[in-house]
Image (cartoon, rainbow, N blue to C red; front, top):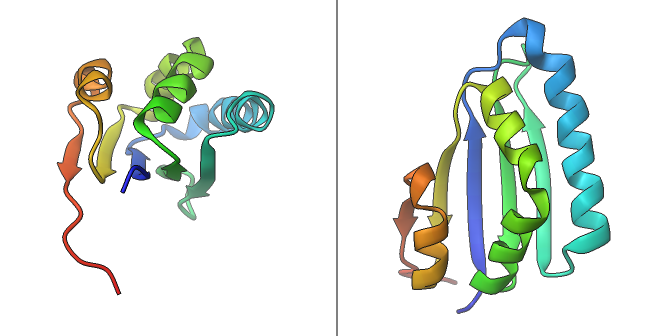
Length: 116
C-alpha cells in the first residue's frame, strides 16, 4: 500500500488569529488544486469555537506528499505559527526520505495492520 493518510492538527489557534488562519488555509487549498495531483484528499475541519483545526489528507505515495510539502513552503510555516503548533499522524508506510523531511514535526507513524 503506497497511499498515505495523514491527520494534521493545529491545536491552539488564538481567537485573534482565526481569520488569518482561515485565509492561509484557503491559499493552501488553491495551491493543492493547482499543483498537487497526487493529493487525493485534502479536507479542513475547524472546531466550533475556531480554536482547533484538523486537516485530513491522503496522498498517492510518499513522493506525492513530499511534493505537497514543497509546494506549500512558507504557507505551512505561517499556519504553524498561527495555529500554535502542528501535530501530525501518518497512517501507512512513509519512505525514509519523507520521514527525514518531516522529522521536525515529530510525526506519529502507524503501520497498516488490517482492512475490511
